[in-house]
Amino acid sequence: MKPAGAMGGGVDRFKLFLPGLALCFTIAAAATFLSEHYGAPVMLFALLLGMAFHFLAEDGKCVAGIDFTAKRLLRIGVALLGARVTAGQITSLGIAPVITVPVLVLGTILFGLVFSRLMGRSLRLGILTGGAVAICGASAALAIAAVLPPKDSEQDTLFTVIAVTTLSTTAMIVYPILFAALGLSDTDMGILLGATIHDVAQVVGAGYAVSEEAGDVATYVKMLRVSLLPIVVLAIAFAYRNQGTGRRGRMAIPGFAIAFGVILALNSLGFVPVVLAETMTEASRWLLVAAIAALGVKTSIKAMTALGARHLALVVGETVFLMGCAIGAVIWI
Image (cartoon, rainbow, N blue to C red):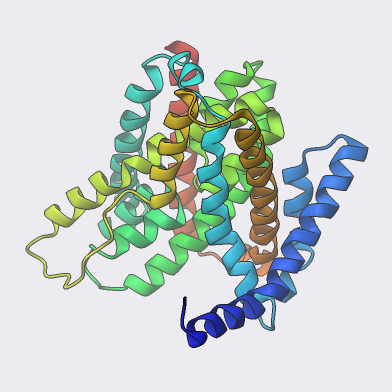
């Protein structure tokens, strides 16, 4: 049996998270209702409804629960998506994504280095923003910042997190419309969404806003990008080994990405009963819609408009470069 103090601590944590959880899942329920009755993507409704409640993310009882939903529950939801995807779906994509994704990641980081100098910014900012855009947004920015020289680290890191989150949220809405206008199939759209949108949450939101097939493919491609994070962080740490950062980044592959792969493998091998797979899929759907709602609540219009022009131009340039290269790869490969 657990000590009474431990049980009490768990209850206290639940009470701390409860107001924010209630807010996010209420928004998720409202978004689901509107989607079912009006035919628009549930993720878009969740995002927009969440943005209307941004004032609750700045202070008060809801903050802890909103953060918990946007981070922890998002990761659980993504891991459970493994129950939706099978090895057959992945092999049907061929070897192209496995080759294309690392090339796009490396190309975007190198472009960030060059473009940052052209914009009169530091190489450090170029690495930080390029890595965030290329791999997995805010998570990559924090991991890379941990192994870079500490000069101006807080300002650059904060800017990068705000910028990539803002652009990723914008991409979640704009990219599906743009890619649909190109006349691409759901599979190709899934590849592009997974290869170009910065954060995992927005990839999932954009993919499933298009179709279930696009969402499954986008999630798989995004996991390929996430798996490259430890390699990139190790390479950057090695490059700056003589500059005494005094810090160590977390270089392991994120646990939710590993869980996604394990569940995918078990499901593909037939070890996950149909009823359990359906339950995991439904749980994943609710967790992800709630996480998108939390992301909307955390999105500040004021912060979006307060970004520096040259800094912002750097991240926008990297984002456009990645998108253009990815479109070219899908069309020509």
